[in-house]
Image 1: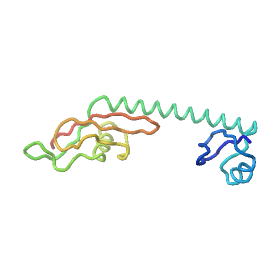
Image 2: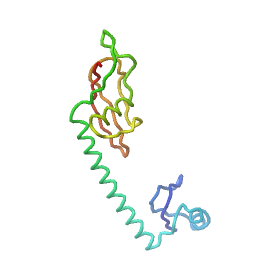
Image 3: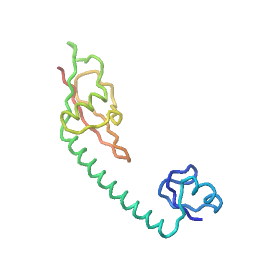
Image 4: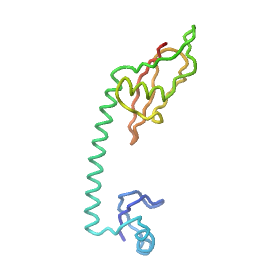
Length: 148
């Protein structure tokens, strides 16, 4: 029996996927539990519409991410830090500080959990951070640590 999965099912498939299973498994478990619907012509048409809508949303999101990446790569983000006489900073720069600097200087609110710093930032200078937007989309942003 052909069915359309409504939710992800382990060892079977993901959401909005058309799969073939045994009749008893579909009628006695998947359909009553709300994991799937029968793949009749009406449900297949609805699936096609859902996939078209999802593709449009993904394209719009990708365009928005590309505009954010272009804006972030225009120039480095400046982060102020208290320093000692030798140029070393007290503490280190965190993703939270980078997130706040991007929000203040570039106008984009990026979650700190999506930002990862490749190096330990303990001195003044220019460094790189990676931002993971999800769906395999990443960007590298330069940030400059300056003394306050």
